[in-house]
Amino acid sequence: MYQEINFDGLVGPTHNYAGLSVGNIASLAHRNATSRPKTAALQGLKKMKMLADLGIPQAVLPPLERPSIPCLRRFGIDGKKDADVLRSASQTAPELLVAASSASSMWTANAATMVPSCDTADGKVHFTPANLSSKLHRAIEADETARALRTIFSDTSKFSVHSPLEGGQAMSDEGAANHTRFAPSFSSKGLHLFVFGASSLKSDLPAPRKFPARQTLEASQAIARLHKLDTTDVLFLQQSNEAIDAGVFHNDVISVGHLSTYLYHEKTFQTGKAAIDQIASSFQGNLDAIEVVDEEVSLEDAVSSYLFNSQIVSLPNGKLAIFAPSECREVESVHLFLQRIQSCSSNQIEEIHFLDLKESMRNGGGPACLRQRVVMNQEEITALSGRIIIDDELFSELEAWIKQHYRDELSREDLSDPKFLEETRTALDKLTRILKLGNLYDFQNK
Ligand code: SUG
Image (tube, rainbow, N blue to C red; front, side):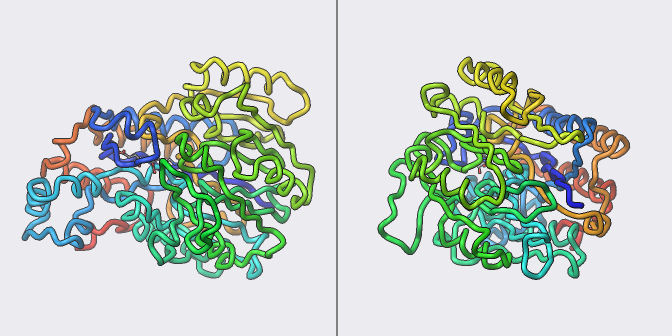
């Protein structure tokens, strides 16, 4: 019996608004605003608790070490002590320091692409950490994410954690945000939909004009091969350029799939309805396709509310629930749409919950961005390392830890404060003890 566990990223102590993501409208709109790291982390943790309380399996992934002094050193910023490196970076390369301080690893939908063992030729669970090569602050996550995944999914007889794809921009990969597994049940073989924005090798495919496409076809194809998926269980479809130019920088900002259900905007794919027909005909089950037409919810409303970044999850009774950002209640067209699908008996959606994730949302990260879905059987779950499954006790410890170690507010200047560097390290060091992850971070291994 397989089940899906949501691995949410714990928001790190450096959560801030640096405006680093061109193409992500919320990120640019909040550039240099004062952030509230404590609130952000508590909002994320509350989401985990809410799902766990409803009987939906929930786990947590630790944040990465930020500011990343090793990263600054790799880019040539020297100093005897780490505080010297920080000072030198703030004086000579302030933009680099900001990139090296981003708490962006919270959006674990971008941590990796994962496929379960029931779908792979070698019977292993496969992960490829995303190289995130389209943005510097995200690209520097990849190797550390690989380390964290190898620490937790450490049993190599069951889990295969690949290295992030090499090849830079041509192999640009953003992980599960552009990947959906459809299956009649968690235990049955799935259909893997890989959505890409552009191709690095085929010149005849259209590309967006205003904003960059973050996923290439070639990266998606490489992952499908590495994960030993059957070619008949794989589909590669191009995201609509119009959507990317409207701020849909990942496919999970315009569609969300879960088991047999697919909630999508009519402008999701470059080939429109033909793409949906392809999914339906390749799927070994009945696809419950819920289309949202532009007339009902415009692309603009979809992007500002993050409707499609809702999580769809299975409740213990087998019915589905939607966890939507609270912004969906504020955008009238979206709220009306949600009320309509909840009252409609032709779909499996029984409950709709709203989540206050405003701190993450201001950086363009909604509920679904904050989680990596991992489908595993019982043996694989038992083989996990660390203490990462959310229960009442772990929740309380993490809550107390956040309250003790996080700042209420953070601004750009705080990132160059050596005291802040120490604070984050004290916090992360303690976190590895709570989560029983050993010395995960570079600063612990010096
Ligand atoms: O990569 N924002 C993230 C948001 C990621 C959302 N993830 C998914 N859709 N799955 C990004 O654009 C903003 C950071 C800043 O500006 O400070 C940022 O990185």
